[in-house]
Amino acid sequence: MINELIKQIKAKNAPIVVGLDPTMKLIPECVKKEAFAKCGETLEGAAEAIWQYNKAILDAVYDLVPAIKPQIAMYEQFGIPGLAAFHKTVEYCKEKGLVVIGDIKRGDIGSTSEAYAVGHLGQVQIGNSFCRGFDEDFVTVNPYLGSDGVKPFTKICKEEKKGIFVLVKTSNPSSGEFQDRLIDGKPLYQLVGEQVKAWGDECMPETGAYSYVGAVVGATYPEQGKLLRKVMPNTFILVPGYGAQGGKGADLVHFFNEDGLGAIINSSRGIIAAYQQEKYKEFGEEGYAQAARAAVIDMREDIAQALANR
Amino acid sequence: MINELIKQIKAKNAPIVVGLDPTMKLIPECVKKEAFAKCGETLEGAAEAIWQYNKAILDAVYDLVPAIKPQIAMYEQFGIPGLAAFHKTVEYCKEKGLVVIGDIKRGDIGSTSEAYAVGHLGQVQIGNSFCRGFDEDFVTVNPYLGSDGVKPFTKICKEEKKGIFVLVKTSNPSSGEFQDRLIDGKPLYQLVGEQVKAWGDECMPETGAYSYVGAVVGATYPEQGKLLRKVMPNTFILVPGYGAQGGKGADLVHFFNEDGLGAIINSSRGIIAAYQQEKYKEFGEEGYAQAARAAVIDMREDIAQALANR
Image (cartoon, rainbow over all chains, first blue to last red; front, side, top):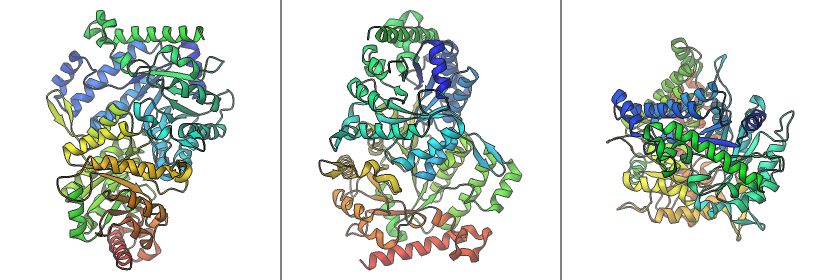
């Protein structure tokens, strides 16, 4: 699946992933109004609004981007109906030929991590049958529990030729609280990065330069990105924090390798709620999907420029 | 809710939480057979088996224990039907007057952690309505992202008078890989423990000695538990790893304070699949719920003995 991701990045000339993180504040009034009229101001109503919003955005951007990253928390907050909308979104992305990165940030002790891995990337045995729960292509994983929290995921990745992105240096302001602390002279995130490289070395596809084990490194920390790029040469880096969180195209160049690959930049609000920005006001609220398309094109240009100028 | 937990621990004289972590290997054949006959060897069939199994165990132990800890991964692996069984289990526990600790180990950047907090402990706004997604009493939280990943949970805890348990030192063999590394001479888990204390100091209930912010420290690491008990005097410690993972009653005494409180010990497989053990063989497969009851009584006795002998 890492090779499929790379193939699509090259074909679409866009190392971009759209974060589908729908919240009630981002969804246009017109979409909510229709959903609430149908299902009420209920969990089901919220899930319906999310689904209609996602579908319109996917229809507007699927030919431009290689991958979509739905943030499961934004669905989980609406309980079972919300999670059903997540599942439906994953399925629709795949129908549209898009690679799906489930931003789930799971991680637990061995057998429990295995359950997450099976539910999100693999198939679970029920009697003599095998069934798939959510079936994303990639998921994000939290490393705090160490190797036996991560290896159940890499095992399933090898079986299914799927992938993970392990949290190394996150984009949020307080990420340094633990991640930047020095251990034998090296920050914790570097130590985690070294482990990500080691886990990845055991998970290389038959062909290609990048392993099934990727990393998450925030756009908001370009200097750390530069270091981690060297520590993990065969690791694809998922870079959140572009746009709304403050990361800019010029900050991103160090996340890429010389081959122009090795990183995929996420934008969520900056794309899906572009219609709320002054810059895309002309589209109006009802033109939210076309505003998202325009924002993807601008983002692609910003990153291409930055890479051309490096 | 921390005071409700303490009240029930005292009333039932049992600092015990039963981990409801149903897997297909733990559920008796007779339960699976009936569920598969009804719903097939499907996600729905698995969810039905889980629900029947959980319900029988809850009916058999609810008067003995203060709290139940369903591990969401074991449900999530069965997709939406599995998560619906999780939700149904949470609701049934509350009907039975039990405190519910959702073992979800979530944690993300600010706004995303807020979505998890709202979905699992609080209420989410939909138009002019407020709805509850999963509505547990406590959840477990992963601290790798630092304060802005944890504080959205503590905010909701204060509003709802609910609680969290933050992962400090986990019970698994490789937990030391990152958690034990020394930072300015102190292991990372101690640093996290100090933060847990600080977060908890801002989250004390109106009465009582324990904060809304608890910690997870594995029974398999008694020495670290001893240290962390001192670092976090007002923190309730959730202790997994008893029984199947190797922790024994005598290892647990240091997790408790002088008041006999401050810790709650989890056992999962050791209780819910007691019928598979030589010791409880007499109950037979069909007596799995009564075997669970007998295992709870033995566990209560083991811990009471250990506390009496300290």
